Length: 146
Image (cartoon, rainbow, N blue to C red; front, side, top):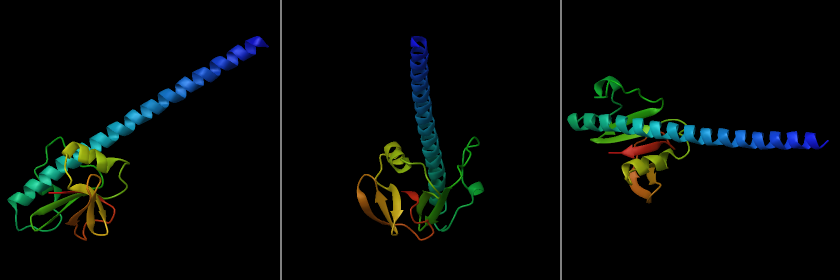
C-alpha cells in the first residue's frame, strides 16, 4: 500500500512539472508571436509612411506592390494602411493579440499608437489624444498614426 502512495506522489509531481513547463512554453510562444507581429506592423508602417511622403497628393489604401517593402517581408494578415492628406494610418484589422497596442507603444515610445474608439485615437499611454481617425479605419482597430 505504501508503494502505491509513493508512485501516486511521483505521478502528481511529474504532472505538475509537465503542466508548468507547457505553460512556460505557451507564454514564450505568445510573446514571440506578439513581438513578431508588432515588428512586422512597424515595418509595414514605415513603408506606407515613406510612400505617403513620396506621394503627398495620394489618398486611400496604397497597393502593397507600390510600397518599398523589404524582399524578406511577409505582410501579416490584418495589417493595412490608409493615407489621407499626407497622414498615414496603419492599423490592424481583426482580432489583435492581447497586449499588441502596449507592445507597439513600447517599441515606438510614441503616444500616437492606440485604439480607434468613437472615431478618435485612444492611447494606452495618454488616453484620449484628440486625433481623429478616418472612417476607413475600422472601429476598435489598433492604429499607428504618422
